[in-house]
Amino acid sequence: MTNGRNEIEGPKERVKSETAKSRGLGGLDMKNIALKGGGALAVVLIVIVVYMMMVATTRGKVRFVLTDHEVQDVSQDIESQKVFPAGSKVFFLVNKRNGRELNAGHVVIEIGHEQGGKIEGVKQISFEIDKDFTKLSSYIPVDYFRKKGKFSVKAFLDGKPVSSEVIDVE
Image (cartoon, rainbow, N blue to C red; front, side, top):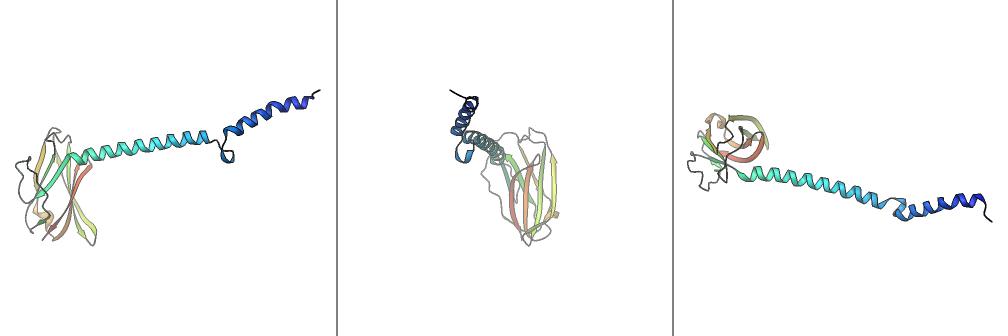
């Protein structure tokens, strides 16, 4: 003989026991937490990989060289000069290592004077170019290097930094 009360509580007890089996520690749904955590981790990894690819491809393929003479032959392996005499022109070269087009319409050279560990008096020289240019070679006027000391010289293609050099003007 059964009473109505036992029949009503029977299915509820089964639902509670099935729910308790699927939950782990402290009544938390471990399966749901694992799925959400895995999804969040995948999104973070994808963002990091895409960012690294963008930065690496831009910086890795562009060459920025500072010298005391104009670079005529871009196939040479040239390193940036670190020390310049006061009153001399500083020539620069921006090109891709593989010889292809720069694929940029705007090149900016930024010059900042370092004093006390801080960069002061930042000036910019900008060039509008065709996207199919393979190199940009010119000089920075002497007026930018009137003071002696350390200067930070940075190159940007379409607003994206590609390289930075620190030079001494003696």
